[in-house]
Length: 303
Ligand code: HEC
Image 1 (spheres, helix red, strand yellow):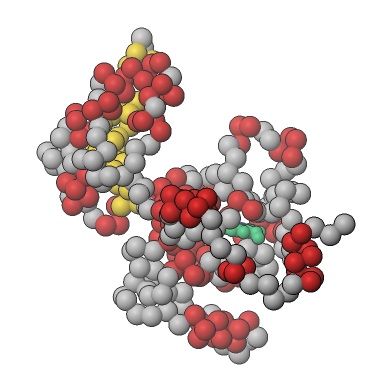
Image 2 (cartoon, protein in one colour):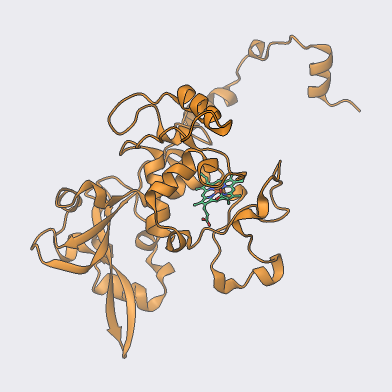
């Protein structure tokens, strides 16, 4: 049986979809939803906009007192939506909720003013509990004070990087599984780096395609290795099936110079054929790029 769309394709191949008039329903939906709805690149969710910045803090931005070891401050600039643990304290469980409100003052955080959160500890009946502290209320730290008192290299775009992982479909191949689930007893041993060599195409869901990434940064914390591997995985793993993600560098490098991808690939092909001794150099990425966020997330969160 031929479906309607099939018969349109077969019998009216030149039928122009735009000749159909929009109805009120169509106009209403389009105007209400706006361009950014759904999986379009302008969607702030897809771009990882509106995410907090994880700041590695080695001194108190107000008093200058040193933190050794450094602590993490989660900086929500004015307007940045708060995390679920702040918006829905019931989800924290009764003890952490009560500490986060009574000591941490998370109920005083205001989205329009922004806030800085940290994870603090309190003793409850001889047991140590972690809870969320709204340092803007308890210590007077403001988002801009924390950002301005620290070096740019201490700012980690972790939340944005996690979004890049999702939008780029890294999960097609990789897992992020805590080892203690022992899931390999059911799903088979987690793969080794070389297990997928030559597999093409990869089929989602049949088995794992790639190493589990949950603690990848404790195996490998090299930013340079990550740069090479994302620009072209074959630079460091000659038979890798992982796609290259060079486009996450954007158009210009850290010095503002345009990145000539065509030239890079031509030189790389020459290297693969043995016509050059070394591969071309991978450009240093600019600070506001998706690749920076992705690598920040991996090296900060996946330890
Ligand atoms: C087509 C499957 C595939 C996709 C998609 C993919 N990877 Fe991979 N990835 C692999 C394979 C296979 C390896 C192991 C070989 C290698 O190192 O290249 C790997 C290795 C890695 C490693 C090193 C792992 C280790 O144990 O040292 C990291 C980090 C990584 N990938 C991150 C990512 C991220 C982030 C994305 C998305 C931007 C991504 N990958 C997309 C297949 C994939």
